[in-house]
Image (cartoon, rainbow, N blue to C red; front, side, top):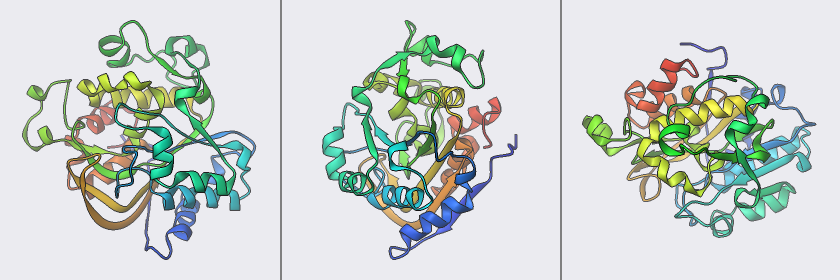
Length: 297
């Protein structure tokens, strides 16, 4: 299914031009027509490791390129909220330091929201406030993983979001139906992690680690939830260095110098999958989202 907002924007960059090229990319995407300068915007970082490792987490030039562009374009620092959560293998404070986010956030005067410190509210309690898909059923989050109910950040509801993922592989995103027995061929070794997966670290609590057994279905559930609560969703992807191999941490860095942006998270991941050498529609999360009509694979 082709969506009206499935166009993907790509800019080839270099170390000397990367900040300017982020501005070029965002203007190609005409982000300023979709994001209001008078409303609060979440900028969801990607922390896969507290230490810096190429392609692993949002690199500092990605964070700075996006923030610099937005402030240069007249967005107010008080309305920009960078945010990230912890995992069972990461620490937010160490990640801010290790990935050089802290000095950039301070330089541009924007907020940083550690999602460990804000209220999470029951997903079902928000149904009356959903922007779309008000009655759509989820695949696994509310049945197989959290049958007694799950919680999402109250802070997220009603705010537009910009995701800052990288291009890299992931050991779990090739699996189908919560079991490698249902997964064949090379996909048993994993798939990709990018735009769709970046919601994983924001919408769910630390207990999300248990969701890996149904990773592909969870990613589609999270995309449905994003569409229910966010007026606008944009992924701005750093592919200056891509991660190959045993992602999302100890990977083989590959210099590609691509910057990618798109409003359709499925379409973004489709392009990223091609870059990393996968057949996009063989990756179960992309296939399922495409078949559900919530993105273009």
